Amino acid sequence: MAVGESTAERYRERDPDVRLMLQVRDDDAAAFEELMLRYQTRVVSVLYHLVGQRDLAEDLAQDVFLRIYRARKTYVAGAKFSTWLFTITNNVASNAIRSRSRRKEINLEARDSGPFGANPLDHMAQAASGQMPTRQLDKREIRDVVKIAIERLSERQRMAVLLSKMEEMSYADIAETMNLTPQAIKSLLSRARANLRDLLEPYIQDGRLQEEET
Amino acid sequence: MNSNETKTDDFDSNDSSANDEQLVAYLDGELDADTMSGVETRLAADAGYRRRLHQLEKAWAMLDDLPREKVDDSFAQSTIEMVAVAANDDVRQVQLIGLRRQRQTLWAGVLLVALVACIGFAVTHLWVPTKNDRLIEDLPVVERLDQYQQIEDIEFLEWLVNSRLFPEEIDDEF
Image (cartoon, chains in turn red, purple):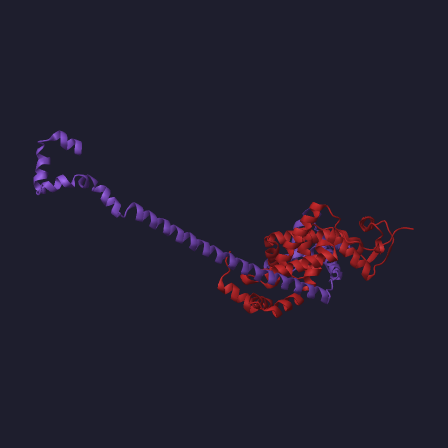
């Protein structure tokens, strides 16, 4: 669908990143570098939580910025720049996940065993059963628990959660990024957050971690 | 939990997905004014509904601890280099396409000239009569020129032909 001149003008006026991208369209290298510096951490973070591997996340992030650069000549401001950027990010991540599952690679990065031992999911299952005494979670443990819970979500739920939480996107923007309707995003986020609630509940109730019985 | 809260605890776990959808949208500020008002009215009266909201809110708040991956200078540097290589490739591609088009234009020109030459040759040889063609056409006259020169009046010859006085000879000739 062609973008109307008034729509493009509106985004040009409201979004400074759109204005930068228009300079990139005119082969302004400094503008491209500025955009990259603004978004590189955010793109790598989202990709890391999607694919679970730091090196892969960086490679994919570079792929995203390369695509942005290659598309510069035909760029038209039909959306916020971040929406367009994360649409490409979502596409790159989905392709990587799909090709990886075809190759049947293991999708979790090597990590140390952390506070939950070699099988953190088993630990979470036991914690959910309420069979363990408790102790206070420290920040690192909370982070690990949350990362594991995110990884348990489906790819689409994970993407919607990351865009909502880390990028603070509206349902409309997430819908545009993921090529779904806002109602579909509403349902997707609802299911994702219910799943997160179920996974994290043992750790939420009083902020305490269930410990293995000795 | 006191008995009053128990009495007003209408939260139905069988309808949890619809409830969750509304509560999550409420937390995200994605409800229209009327629906939001309805949710808030229910929150005031339904302890189970409130409890569910708090659970969803707390689980969501835990995601604040999701790490933001830091990116060092080498990432930006290598990305810029990759883009520079891509830009050079693009320029080379454009140049190659330009060269290819020039060659195509040249070949088209050569073929056009060859075609025009062929047409010209055909026109010249098929439709433009040569001196030899004319001679061949006049050969019967040339062969009897001496006899024809004996008759000075061409109209007399035409009369002889039309009169059919010597039909065998005329038919042999014509």
